Length: 143
Image (tube, rainbow, N blue to C red; front, side, top):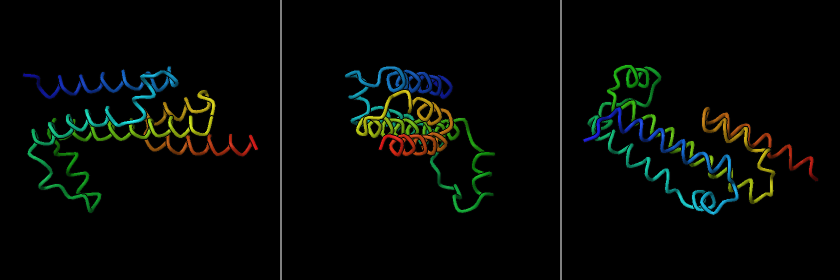
């Protein structure tokens, strides 16, 4: 049976391997399949559920205050921390897929969205902000 550390490592390698087509081969058939349906976030959701169940769920979690969030993270088990990480991985990848679909629909050059994709992969919301700024600026200049 795989332990939390092993599953965490597998999920990290899995997501990295699935970001590569978005970054390096945006027009490939594989990439087009990846961005059309949330296969990868669904797989990560299974990891998320596994880690949540392993931690006993979020019964005592208080999401209504900063102190509640700090307590949640300070007292987190390895499974709870891994579940939190899966949450980031799944949603950041989902956003990356949306950005690529949106950019392709607007005929934006892929080079323009590489930085936003990388920022989404590493910094989540900064990638979304960068994508919106870059894409809107490009479209205005193109007119």
